[in-house]
Image 1 (cartoon, one colour):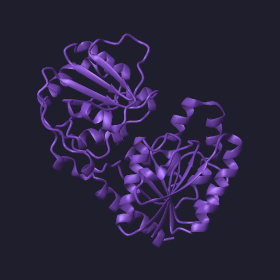
Image 2: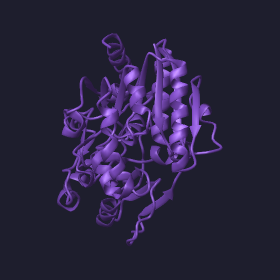
Image 3: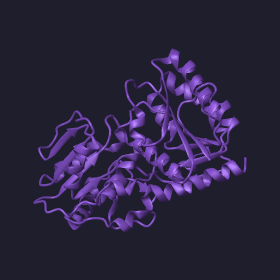
Length: 356
């Protein structure tokens, strides 16, 4: 198949999302498909193709609202000139001509978040624009890939769904060497995330650090929030993977999102948690993970509620003490591998094309 992957992305090629996309399309190519990646972005002076080995990248850059419409139309024209068999689009803001494109070719939308909840937190013109235009993309798409079952059941998506599949986020396991067992004198925990994401629950991690002054907390990628930081926490700032890998591999326990309730969500499949597990690090989270239905012993799932630290300190301590120095076996997380997940995705897209 000729597959066009269309994405609007402004966080650059070093982001976890773009790394995920590159791993996806490279697997598609290995399965014998012809791939082109079409990127709409405001990022300049970046060679995106360097980050997606052997995948042709078509880039359209814009520099403001005025140029967005004309530049997006140009990108649509480039896709039409290539004439793919199907289009895979990470659902985002609607732009004129997108509905025409998604109607013309058998198209699949990837749904990664509760768009209305996230946009509502921004309010302003962007929210109202999205609210008024989102259906133009949703109603013409033939297929939907949801990263969680919860998202697939949201009425503001399900009313438009003709066909769907649930595929949690995956990771290229072979690129992440399993960590050796640690011998830390005190329990060491690590968190990796992005700045400004309240649902990460950084305030909750700070609370845990205050309650466990003998533990060490390494915080990667997030800003220091405006409250007193205990001495057992280190905020490393934004680091590249080469820079933060040694920190993660020295950790006994990793921490995932602890406040997903702030997004009015209960389920997720975060890339960072897959990265932790690829390194063999057991994880504490505050939500239900799509790919682990059976409550495995290496994931401590705290209640997805505001007060989920202090009442559960004993459980957190018991879990962390037990797993300190131990590692999660690779065979336990093999189903997270990109190879397995992308074979399922390609099979689904093939069915969409065949039933057009």
